[in-house]
Amino acid sequence: MPLTSLTRLATIALLGGSLLTITAPAAATPRCDGHTALFLDDAPTCSGRNSPATGHGVVPVSRQVHTAGRTVEGGTGVAFTWPGVYFEGRFRGTSVGLALNDAVNDYDVQIDGGAPTTLVTPGDTTHWITGLSRGDHTVRLVKRTESPWNRAQFGGLVAGPGGRILAAPAARHRQIEFIGDSWTAGYGDMSSSRDCSGAGVLTRSSNADQAFGARTAKALRADYQINAWSGIGMVRNYNGSSPGTDYRTYYDRALQAVDESVWKRPASWHPQVVVIGLGINDFSTPLNPGEKWADEAALAADYVTAYQGFLDKLRERYGPATHFVLTYPDLSYRTTALAESVQQIVRERHDRVSALYYDNNALGLDLLGCDWHPSLHDHAILAGTLTTYLRNGLFL
Image (spheres, rainbow, N blue to C red):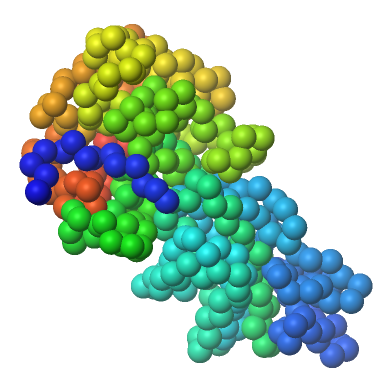
């Protein structure tokens, strides 16, 4: 029977830097697994999953590409789990290889800012892009999908025959961190139907790079993190699932489902704005028998206390200048507790905390994505609304 409300809003989703001037050595160009070695320094080296040239080390991925996402260095590359993690690099030549090891997630690849090509669960491979014009190019690889329990690995860029990997692009001056649930993660945003129950349909239909966070950051020319997990709330997960855990359980992790994986914030990551969208899962379904809250009033009180503590933590981490924007959609079909709670939090604070309400009807959201989630149409509207809000508020 078709849904007539938004009660399934938050269904858990299961699962340019400067060019270096290099003079090539007079001797024959060293090779790595049949491909030209890199020239990030005066000495040639190899990259990614290819074996290093004799006498030379592997070029760290951090020197090849720029990323603002949460990653962990290890082996010949970096590991990551959060949705929307992106890697941006530069190369010279007619081809480039992307060393990936991920049999679970989908990725988008862009060359020179053109239309993206999707890699569906690429597995353990070096994906080659060939047939490009001679000259310098940019490449962008982004993780579309969610996989809290799957550790993806990016081994870096591999130069094609006669080519070279250039210095990584410079970081952008603006930074935005997006914290949230399925709305922020882009759950089902590419779908043309609310029913995504078929095998693999949800994964193919989800794209964090087309969700409002990535769209907003691109419009504002900002680097960004999408630290989102579908079905998770501030104190209560969707329909009371996984009691004893919530978003705060995982926020400090570099790899979501790895307990000991504590994210060590680099000094370079200091966002001017943190956009938070947590609360849909807390309030979109009625309390079930056996949950720890006696009623919705008790849930709301717990939510407010936890949210305030979370904001205190972020304030300590990012300092007094960072703006916190608390976003929330219309849940009035079931309750006003989310709106009232967020508004209370903002009233009680005086440290650059504000709220942005997404009025579903006034904005014209159709919620035609999987399981009544925002569609591409909706994410464009949400991004436009948020971008205007940040610009008008001079937050960036």
